[in-house]
Amino acid sequence: MWVKAYAEPDYVLWWDQKETATWGWYLSATGEDATRLVTRLRTRYDFSFPWVLYYVLYDFGDIIMMSNCMKGIKARAEARWARAHLDSNAPQIQAA
Image (cartoon, rainbow, N blue to C red; front, side, top):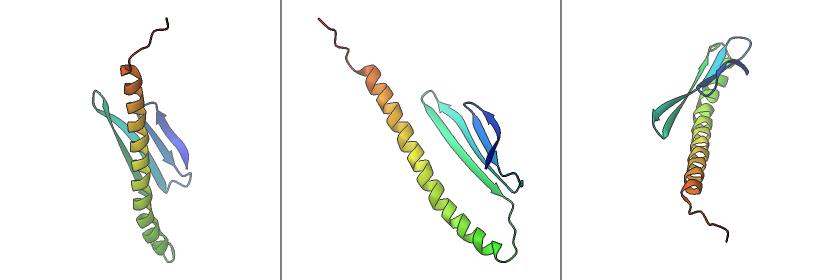
Protein backbone atom coordinates (compact mmCIF):
# COMPACT_ATOMS: atom_id res chain seq x y z
CA MET A 1 0.00 0.00 0.00
CA TRP A 2 1.11 3.54 -0.79
CA VAL A 3 0.01 6.84 0.73
CA LYS A 4 -2.53 8.54 -1.52
CA ALA A 5 -3.55 11.44 0.76
CA TYR A 6 -2.32 12.75 4.08
CA ALA A 7 -3.25 15.65 6.36
CA GLU A 8 -1.47 15.78 9.71
CA PRO A 9 -2.91 15.27 12.30
CA ASP A 10 -6.30 14.39 10.77
CA TYR A 11 -6.00 11.45 8.40
CA VAL A 12 -3.96 9.22 6.15
CA LEU A 13 -5.35 7.33 3.15
CA TRP A 14 -3.45 4.38 1.70
CA TRP A 15 -4.20 2.66 -1.59
CA ASP A 16 -2.85 -0.07 -3.81
CA GLN A 17 -1.77 1.13 -7.23
CA LYS A 18 -4.17 -1.29 -8.93
CA GLU A 19 -7.01 0.75 -7.40
CA THR A 20 -8.63 -2.33 -5.85
CA ALA A 21 -8.22 -1.32 -2.19
CA THR A 22 -8.06 1.73 0.07
CA TRP A 23 -7.34 1.92 3.77
CA GLY A 24 -8.14 5.09 5.67
CA TRP A 25 -7.21 6.19 9.20
CA TYR A 26 -9.01 9.25 10.60
CA LEU A 27 -8.62 11.02 13.96
CA SER A 28 -11.44 13.14 15.34
CA ALA A 29 -11.55 15.04 18.61
CA THR A 30 -14.42 13.89 20.82
CA GLY A 31 -13.68 16.13 23.77
CA GLU A 32 -10.97 18.25 25.34
CA ASP A 33 -8.79 15.26 26.22
CA ALA A 34 -10.28 12.58 23.96
CA THR A 35 -9.77 11.47 20.38
CA ARG A 36 -11.48 8.80 18.31
CA LEU A 37 -9.55 6.75 15.76
CA VAL A 38 -11.61 5.39 12.88
CA THR A 39 -10.18 3.06 10.26
CA ARG A 40 -11.89 1.77 7.14
CA LEU A 41 -10.70 -0.76 4.59
CA ARG A 42 -12.43 -1.03 1.23
CA THR A 43 -11.59 -3.79 -1.21
CA ARG A 44 -12.96 -4.54 -4.66
CA TYR A 45 -13.47 -8.30 -4.57
CA ASP A 46 -12.84 -10.77 -7.38
CA PHE A 47 -15.50 -13.44 -6.85
CA SER A 48 -13.91 -15.97 -9.19
CA PHE A 49 -12.43 -19.20 -7.87
CA PRO A 50 -9.99 -19.42 -5.98
CA TRP A 51 -10.04 -15.73 -5.00
CA VAL A 52 -13.40 -16.04 -3.26
CA LEU A 53 -11.85 -18.51 -0.77
CA TYR A 54 -8.93 -16.17 -0.18
CA TYR A 55 -11.24 -13.24 0.61
CA VAL A 56 -13.31 -15.27 3.10
CA LEU A 57 -10.14 -16.11 5.03
CA TYR A 58 -8.79 -12.58 4.53
CA ASP A 59 -11.89 -10.94 6.01
CA PHE A 60 -11.97 -13.27 9.01
CA GLY A 61 -8.26 -12.69 9.68
CA ASP A 62 -8.68 -8.94 9.20
CA ILE A 63 -11.28 -8.77 12.00
CA ILE A 64 -8.85 -10.40 14.44
CA MET A 65 -5.85 -8.40 13.24
CA MET A 66 -7.63 -5.03 13.41
CA SER A 67 -9.04 -5.78 16.85
CA ASN A 68 -5.55 -6.49 18.17
CA CYS A 69 -4.12 -3.49 16.31
CA MET A 70 -6.70 -1.08 17.75
CA LYS A 71 -6.27 -2.47 21.28
CA GLY A 72 -2.50 -1.96 20.98
CA ILE A 73 -2.91 1.61 19.73
CA LYS A 74 -5.36 2.34 22.56
CA ALA A 75 -2.99 0.93 25.21
CA ARG A 76 -0.02 2.97 23.90
CA ALA A 77 -2.09 6.18 23.63
CA GLU A 78 -3.49 5.81 27.15
CA ALA A 79 -0.03 5.01 28.57
CA ARG A 80 1.44 8.07 26.84
CA TRP A 81 -1.38 10.27 28.18
CA ALA A 82 -0.89 8.89 31.72
CA ARG A 83 2.88 9.49 31.59
CA ALA A 84 2.38 13.07 30.40
CA HIS A 85 -0.14 13.84 33.14
CA LEU A 86 1.78 12.08 35.90
CA ASP A 87 4.96 13.94 34.95
CA SER A 88 3.22 17.34 34.89
CA ASN A 89 1.45 16.73 38.23
CA ALA A 90 4.50 15.37 40.06
CA PRO A 91 5.84 17.59 42.84
CA GLN A 92 8.95 19.49 41.80
CA ILE A 93 11.98 19.03 44.07
CA GLN A 94 14.13 22.11 44.43
CA ALA A 95 17.88 21.65 44.73
CA ALA A 96 19.31 23.27 47.87
